[in-house]
Image (cartoon, rainbow, N blue to C red):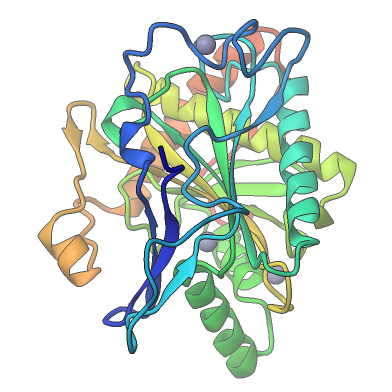
Length: 341
Ligand SMILES: [Zn+2]
Ligand SMILES: [Zn+2]
Ligand SMILES: [Zn+2]
């Protein structure tokens, strides 16, 4: 039987690539008998704390084959690249807030070294680590894990961010992300948590009800530019943000978490950051991106971001207490929500 096809098809209407893979449909859905990520499984073995695996059903691969040639502006390319899985703990259940801190630091280190290694391949343009958590987001395996897509093109969203950073620099002479940090910290109302190197906040311009961005306050372009101490402080910020999410409604909150960093080549001046998009708008209601969001790329926000930030700060206070009880001492402070910190 054929190994299937992995190809990129160009969407001429939106100017972006769609990754098409013909074997992806058979990937296991939740009810696999044995967890493939637990210690002792075929792929994982024993004696590890954090492990990088190849995705068994990768959307992109280095020996990708296309099913057909393109025609005219219907372009088709091989989906050259890789899809990796990073399992953050041998424990079958939990989230980034329950994963041991040393694992989390190692996790950040691994993402940085994967970025560096994959970018050595001149056909690779971008390394995109992300984490999907929760059944409502369609996560097929519940064992805590992240994914890393190694792409032969720069994702449109990252291109757009860079274009806005470039424009801002041309008009104002500074870095957009550094300047967003300055505005957020000056106003204070949407800050959630801060340690010596990172600020976590619900942005003024949030699109998801409980969206949180985590920015390094030093102008760092990519994960590979983080100093060892900053990697630990990023791990700390991720731990506290997920703990705050899980304290918000009293259940483990589904979310998407995405690392935005400088592409492999060019894009000088990009400022790396992490974005969280939880899909809930209340304990029992989801914010489903529907007609206006998908059809128009217009997001509606049904509250004031400052109110949602206040809820998150209260959850973060609870979360910090919980973390301390479990033996972890956060490296920073929950924000007071006041101006000029
Ligand atoms: Zn497991
Ligand atoms: Zn910057
Ligand atoms: Zn971003």
